[in-house]
Image 1: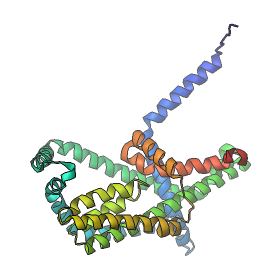
Image 2 (image 1 turned 120 degrees about the vertical axis):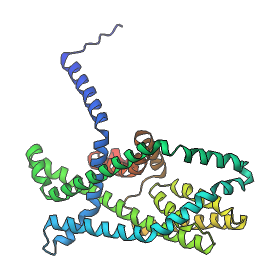
Image 3 (image 1 turned 60 degrees about the horizontal axis):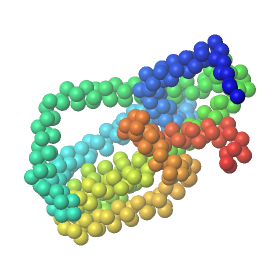
Image 4 (image 1 turned 90 degrees about the horizontal axis):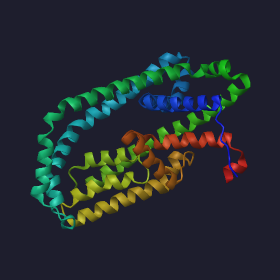
Amino acid sequence: MKGKIDFSYSTVVKFFILLLGAWFIYRIRQLLLILFVSFIIMSALKPVVRILEKTRLHRAWSIVVVYVFIWLFIGGILASIIPPLVTQTGNLIMILPSSLSKIQLLNLDQSAVSGQIISLLGSLPENVLNIAGNIFGNIINLITTLVISFYLLTERDNLDKYLGRWLGERRALEVSALVSRIEARLGTWVRGELILMLTIGVLCYLGLRILGVETALPLALLAGLFEIIPSIGPILSAIPAVIFAFTINPLVALSTVALYFLVHNLENSFVVPIVMNKATGVNPLISLLGLLIGFELAGAVGTVLAIPAILVIETVGAHYLPPAQQKE
């Protein structure tokens, strides 16, 4: 039997509109990332702003107070750790080639490794303008994100009114409830991750200092930062620590492996259940796939935003899918 395919005018128009929409989303993907990060920041700060509002402080001033406190807190931490961090990081970079050459399993030549590092450092002046441009662009993106977060916090209470104009009162209440659930999960994730990063960083620093590792501060800072990447983050942060520990002796290297293994197990057994309260738990396989997809789409930024994106998708799916389909 011969089939006949009939394309109507409206079908062709819808197809081209769909293509145009996909092209437009691709073109503004950087802006969408900024908006998503701003929404995450708003979700994390909203409970604190609510508490300040209960003291009869105006919402705008409550947001300003929160922003000032955060910047003072970050500035105080940076002022206290930057001097030793710069010194220890410099020492770590200087002795890293010899550290690699001492690991016979890697079969690396110290002169070759040193030559590669010197070559990279030699090409650094040629890329100064690119580096400066990237830094300037990141600063602009950071300021833009904070400004958008400020306005999102300011206008959050007007969400129902804005939605009501477009969706109607009943539909607006439903969407507003969904947004509130998304905010709750994202806010819990952000605050939980910050506590986890701080806890892991402090534990690794104390453990490395006890083992006699002189560059404990940059290694612990790396462990804390990589905590935001689930599953593979602890493994990635342990590699440079173990490599450097071989410069002392193999026993310290084995002790470093045991330290990171112990910290990781303490995290999974005690810290994560207490901090996260299993509210933002994501299947490990889904997390890994999300990380890979996020890296392919947006690089390192996509890796960091993969879990929040999964949380949003899960929350929306749980809201709109019937219970039978959710079980399937």
